[in-house]
Image (cartoon, rainbow, N blue to C red; front, side):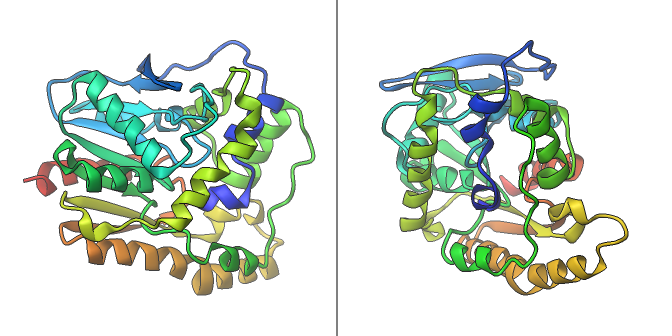
Length: 322
């Protein structure tokens, strides 16, 4: 959610900025393809251990490779699969189906195709809407839910954006390396194999150029139809990222930015963190079988804090599903 309105989503710009080149993806997964009536969707399989299946859903603008760091930590004990949604990454770009329900239908189709009767669904950011929808409409398919800074809705996002007093520096270099450097230094403040793999994965179908027009339809649908957590019956783990200045304003790290850091901290304390906290609190309140964990850091908390997040998920699977 946070990323979707602060910067142009990677999935919308990569076809114009990054040449495919030779893959450097060393993540321990195999690539599969889910065939839908109108789309061909990429999924990554990190292992087929005979245990509970975990299915990872990325947020708006992301693809399955964003989980390339976290997934192997979970795959030591569980079967782990990650889906790239329609119009994202290497998945195809159909002309319709950019709604929360359609994304959830694609997710259910993946379960059917892989013979997974019940799964623990993990969603990051707007991917939380997808896993919630499936849990509400098909509760028999859901063993548990994990929200990675994904609980809440989009109400009030415009005023939240408008209140930010410290703007992110705009990109100045449109070359592939310039785009990579901007994301590393101005957006994430870190880099990893997962981010690199996600950065390199983009659509090659002839309709990928339509993504800037099509993908916002998903956010609009999400905003019109906020998640109804009261209908969720599965146990849930909510991992909320408490935003910090160093994590969310990486260009302000170090000395020489005292005034800007103070304004940024005030914004986080008074606007952004309360807004996120309200969404997480609503989800926690409306899902009686949920647990809320706050972790300081970035919206992509599962990348720099992958070990902490994996520990929380594994603890939830060991204790929360009983």
